[in-house]
Amino acid sequence: MSSSAAAPPQPDPRRWLALVALCLSMLVLSFDTTILNVALPTMAERIGAGTGDMQWIVDSYTVVFAAAMLPAGLLGDRFGRRRMLVAGLVVFLAGSLLGSLVDSPGPVIAARTVMGLGGAFVMPLALSVIPSLFGPAERPKAVALASTAVAFGMPLGPIIGGALLQHFWWGSVFLVNIPLVALAIAACFTLLPETTDPAAPRVRASSTFCTAAGLGALVYGIIEAPSRGWGDPLVVAMLAAGAVLLAALVLRERAVERPMLDMALLRQRGFLGNSVAATLVSFILTGMIFVLPSYLQTTLGYDAFGTGLRLLPMMGGLMVAARLSPALAARGGPRPVIVAGLLVLAAGAFLGATTAEGDGYGGTALWLAIAGVGFGLSIVPAMNSALGALPRERAGSGSGLLQTLRQTGAAIGVAILGSVLAAGYTGRLDTAGLSPDAAHTARESVAGAHAVAARLGDRALAASADASYLHGMDLTLVVCGAAALLTALLLAAFLPNPRQDRAPAAPAPAGAADAMAARPADARQ
Image (cartoon, rainbow, N blue to C red; front, side, top):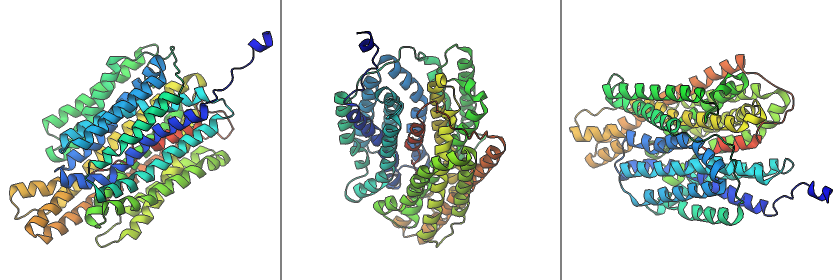
């Protein structure tokens, strides 16, 4: 009897079917992060969305996702991961339904905000359920399947989004989420066991408020600065408020015994360096994809479906390099792979910045593929090494901090790089001879300028808009390349390079899956 009592618990016989439910949940998020890319130029034209509106359609999701992800994970630990995961899917479904019904920028931003809140529950909780379902022997295979689901959704989104926009109205890119989410909810209810962790830190309203309000104020100030001016009182006030609130968050979390956001982990050089790399890559990837759809659709003249297909070189390069990077890191350590990836990324960005008027898609495909390889080489070993640098007992808090930093990088990337693009575009655009209303519409977006040019029969305005947008895109890519190059040099000098085999603090591929899933491919205009 005693030997029977001591026998280890049998694994859940439905665990692989449960994994299907998790993969479906993660596929929904991955699919949605890329499907919006090809819709934004159409939305700029159909609902009158300007540059700032497009930035907020992206960043309303990202800011809420970043701010709510950590408390969402803690709520799942305390009240049931399946329950909170399903709740997140329901909220995401509600946001998708709202997005498909509205027809102006403000309500679309509100819908994206709701979707970001739902997504913040889905991603961390889907990943956290895997260790409770699978033992050490099966866990790598389970996480690899989850990573595949995430990777599959990324290139699928632009293609399906483009196909929908060819035959239906722009809201169909929201509506298509509804059957997928409904299927994921049903699968989670019927297949996932309920798990909890009552020992998890409690959610503090003050820290959650400081995170959301601080990020929101900072992003608002950066987005509004190109049109209002950096010295505008509102811009200065919002930037100052964001800095104060985020500083208050750090001080608050350092003062409590069991923080939601364990800032002390940043004292570990390995975790800090790899977190900086992962955050910077999220910053650049989001910003790069941010500028492409309007260039491909408005300037080069491809339709929405063609634009989706032409984003595949970057996705393909990312997926191939992501598969190769773990083996390369195992041979020579993660540092040379991460540094090489950042250098390749910088080369792709600088090559893209040489794009000139009259260039076709061939050169764009080349630099997109190069940049994709750089992303894959850098993000996977950076995420895995950051988690592997943590003691096992702090893996949960470290993963939450890493995810929050990366999402913050993506949100600020959209704000800063979008503002660089907007400043470059409006600074070069020639609106001489236009009425004030027409000039305002033309300055709002390149799609708006083309609409005005078509209405007035003004070919010179259309040509000026294309040249101005290309100038802004080139400036944005120079900033991306410089950021990647500087980070590569710093990491080459200071990042530790452990070569010994060691068990990571959390399943390594999960970090890669999460990195690929969360906001790498939102765009604007």
